[in-house]
Amino acid sequence: MKSSTSSGRVSSADKAGAATTPRGADATRARILDAARLLFSQNSYEGVGVREIASLAQADPALVIRYFGSKEELFRAVVAMAFDTEDLLVGGIDALPKQATDMLMGTVDNEAWRASYDPLRLLLCSIGSPTAGPILGYYLDKDFLTPLSRALAGKHARERAALLGAQIIGFALMRVALSGSSTEPLQRTSLRKLLQESLATALKAI
Image (cartoon, rainbow, N blue to C red; front, top):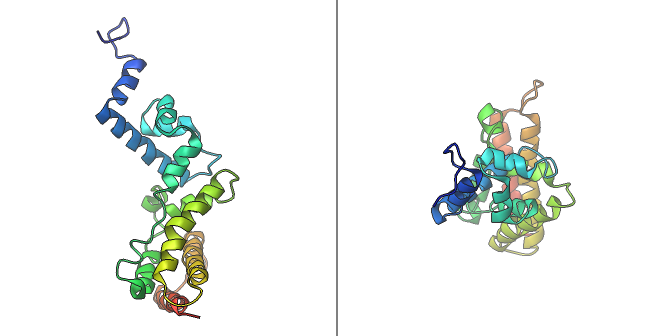
């Protein structure tokens, strides 16, 4: 017999039980992960609590711990999906300058972008955290720098990949920082051309 309150309402225990059925568990876990992705890309690691994540995911806080073990492990699960080179390398290494330029010149100055998940903001929000910083560094190396260095030909591939990554992340940071500025705007056409040329230079073997 189902447990319920005397008023006939479904109890919190029933809700937790429903969430742990195979289908319910998958859906709840996905909601928790989506909520964590969003909150961690808008606040520092220390500034986000399990209760906030659970509230946004419409889940019991106990389920966050049940599915992920801890806030740190949930953050790790988020970061494990944050960085990749698939889009950058879709046309091969020679197409990377144009691919990266197209991605980097996207819109970063509207409300929809500010309210959504973004891996760059995830990185910027918590890279200085003693707990989250090493996790971000590990996956940035594993999922971004290492595949990029493998795709590069010639000497010093890892070092060139690091410089290339610094250009990409640094440019993205500058665009975000200047997106709300009312001072003299950057000329978009010239910026696109210069960025693509700069990235192409970084690909050349030393």
